[in-house]
Length: 219
Image (tube, rainbow, N blue to C red; front, side, top):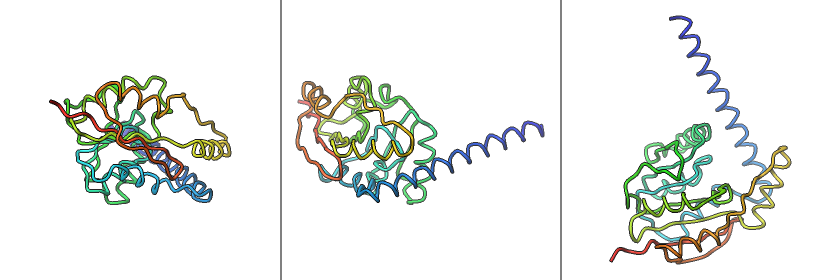
């Protein structure tokens, strides 16, 4: 029994150590971005307000460090944030708690191509800095379409050309590479426009480009 407790304690300590390392890396990268003129939190606020007032609940695809989810929650929305990386979601949960938004955000560790939510459940959805990580975006886009309510808003955002260069530079300094699949806002917009979405707006700022789409209402 003691041995079991020791194992449990060891696992907890390893998880806490990893979480601290993730937070230190995030803080260092955030500071580097700021020195280069890029504010991740301001970018998320810009993206999530691009369509004006949003209806909830909100779906955030690709939790990352939870910055987009926090921007949505700051608007008073209840948020479900989905990602396949449990470690990243642990850091996002910590950052969310530090901001006092933990009661408004639920983190779900899941593949976004198989969402465990009923049809027409969410009032809005966001995908920020997510598309360029997908080899095949179609299953994810179809799932987002399924769970979004008619007349619901979908915000697609990704780095501008200057943004990709900035991220590449920062990650290169860290000894890392920034993989880019080739999936773009333009290709995602074209796919969704051919289904049941209507593009409503395009805008750019904070090293990002945004496409606002609305799901066509049922007749």
